Image (tube, rainbow, N blue to C red; front, side, top):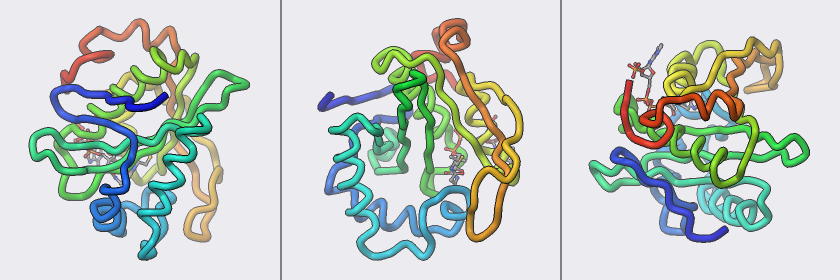
Length: 191
Ligand SMILES: CC(C)(COP(=O)(O)OP(=O)(O)OC[C@H]1O[C@@H](n2cnc3c(N)ncnc32)[C@H](O)[C@@H]1OP(=O)(O)O)[C@@H](O)C(=O)NCCC(=O)NCCS
């Protein structure tokens, strides 16, 4: 599956390319990204190129589909969003981050809507899920706006910065996705 491009009025999403490494290196180094994800901090000098290379390999093997997110209003690289299928259950887990200068402009929501469309319509998944730390409600809001539902709390589910942390767990199943108004499924409408 090459040359996939997902696009709406707000963002363009495409597989990572070598030329993204300096933007990723700059944006992913912020402590606010590491606090809410498994992006390392401090961000090592070669981490962005390795992440891109791994993303490309995973794309080829079908292990994960990692997209770069381009902010259409500035044409700048703004963040990453990936979907990791578990084929035996026909479901996938989503993860993402948006660089600080781009926060609060609807990019994550627009990107997640496109990624869910890719998951259900291209990958033909039955379920897409994601979790966020309880101190990161903005991410839960993004999931809600994209049509995901809160399922509960996975207690001490991950070891993050040497601390076991709960994850607030969200999911959307195919029937939820198909019941979304088409504006939420396919367009850029922002709540
Ligand atoms: C979480 C994150 C992806 C949001 O990206 P974004 O592009 O700013 O998100 P959007 O603009 O699409 O939407 C953010 C929503 O969260 C809301 N929000 C922001 N801070 C909030 C808070 N403290 N409590 C509740 N909601 C909050 C915003 O108001 C907005 O909702 P609204 O449109 O209803 O007003 C971004 O902040 C980020 O990358 N954070 C660090 C990494 C991370 O958390 N990744 C996700 C791991 S699960």
